[in-house]
Length: 186
Image 1 (tube, rainbow, N blue to C red):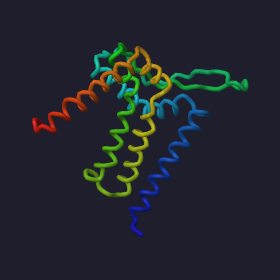
Image 2: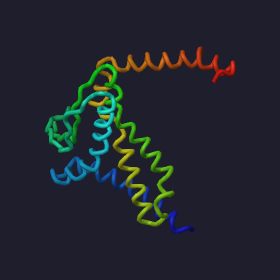
Image 3: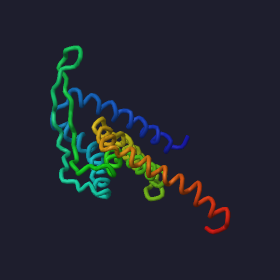
Image 4: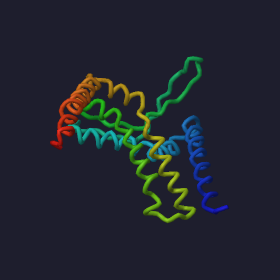
């Protein structure tokens, strides 16, 4: 058996262990361990929001990756801790709310590009394979928009703006562009 297969298996085990470690740390970890893990997780997520807000005219004015502990009591009466890892403040309007809210999904594109091209630039060694899986874990685990992200995306009727925009594009393709292609104009 090729030795590299063992390292790919070790990379998958690393991803599962990182996920389990993160869950335990968030339940019982101290502020410094949560801070370290939070920066590693929060930085790509919040950076995606900041980039999209900048590109869509949201003029971001606040960027925080400092975790905050929020104590609360759950439905069974037990004291629990919720962590707020970071935020980006921006001017949200009807044309950029959905894009800003769903910005972390761009990290999936980064993960796909990493998956596709990583070994064209990096050696196929044990340390590089483990780094490959660690990068994929960071990008994929942080690509899921939070509840607050969904609230921002659905605010300002932004979804309606994009639906109309997509509808106009579809109509243009169906009735104008296809006709030009069929006549040999394009």
